[in-house]
Length: 281
Image 1 (tube, rainbow, N blue to C red):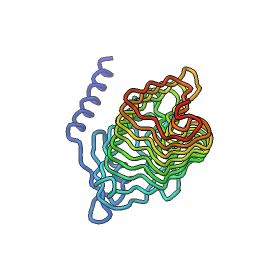
Image 2 (image 1 turned 30 degrees about the vertical axis):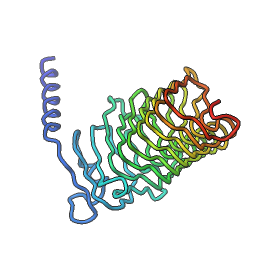
Image 3 (image 1 turned 90 degrees about the vertical axis):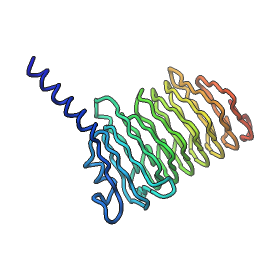
Image 4 (image 1 turned 120 degrees about the vertical axis):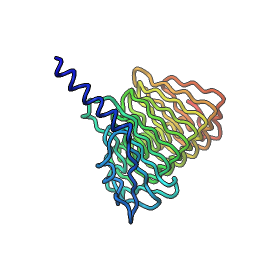
């Protein structure tokens, strides 16, 4: 037992020592140690920062469940292009039993993804922190054209970003929030996304918990229900709180702005100008 305790202490101390000396890994197309983002990810350790220079990187990234920051030169300057060959950025995987670590993605565009679930960004067993980024022109044949949040009970944060012109074959053209997931969305524009089924902008499954603040959900389309937002019928019922946000100009057969089958709270929000029969149903 003493040997085991000593070994565990040694491992923990080594981990803390490395995180205290976390490295900056620079990526650029010429003149850097890492010519691609994936090679930098493969060489990274917990706490590292991957700094990606301006340019377009034709990659489909696999990011492990470790504390990591990926920083672009700016949302209009650093582009990660999936070339329609799968999800552009996948965080973690379902077979990892370890606690979810925070992966921060800042100042990039994620585009041209095409997958069954989560065309642009698929979040599995990782705590997403997406900041000041653009998720655009991605598609999913099933759900989450732009983003799918699969990290059960692990909070995902999306702030200061634009999620636009994404498409889903079934649910959640912009974002799909899977059952039991927790989403915190602030100062985000979710616009001109399309779903063949429900939730042109956002689709929230049963038992999920979502907050949307200071955001605009506009001009999204669902060919069935919930043009802007669809809050599912699942049990336990999903809950969503919307504050100081605008839900305008969305379109659906029913619930042009919001179709609510769960628990919805709206404070200081504007829901108007969505197509008939109702802004909220």
